[in-house]
Amino acid sequence: MASPTALFPTLLDASDWPRLHPAVRRMHADGHVIEASGQADVDGARHALARWLRHLLTLPEPGTGQAIALTIERHPTHERWTRRFARGRMQSTLRQGNDLRLHEKLGPATLHFSLRREGDAIDWQLKRVSVLGFPLPRALFGTVLSRSGAHDGRYAFDIDVQVPLLGQLIAYRGWLEIDHVG
Image 1 (spheres, rainbow, N blue to C red):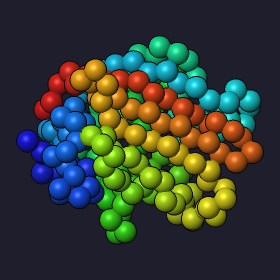
Image 2: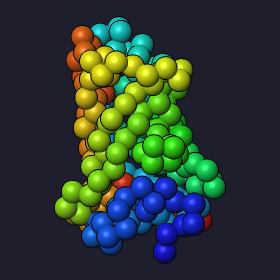
Image 3: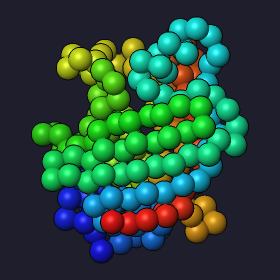
Image 4: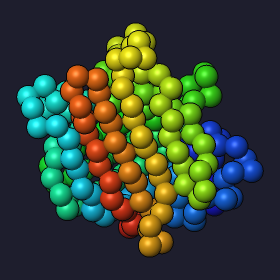
């Protein structure tokens, strides 16, 4: 049963929600607090500017086979996602924007996504980026490929962020299993 404060069921077309894999629906709608754990492979450019930008945005450092723990706290106006990787902690706040898109705040940056169902997964389509409230020109924010799906019955994620002149800022993919729903 979806939590009354869950964002994702309201940001996707109502006819698409039941067509998502059960692991995806559970992660994005059950309970007020979700605790999950799993494993992730993290990659990204190794040069100093990429490392500094990852630090600024609270993104983890590269490393394969990292343990990951996720806590999702659902509040009436937002969700707080805390991801603890073996090589870093990443926290973001997700909310529905006035444009009916998902807004994810990471440090000083806010990413504006349109969500759509693709098969039994969610495809996050980056539409806009703002830094300290100021929109970046499209040419500066590169590409973000992000997908929430399932693999072997478990929740799976695949994110790849490419930034002009820097290359791959971060890519992380892996799986999570829910440990607790509160």
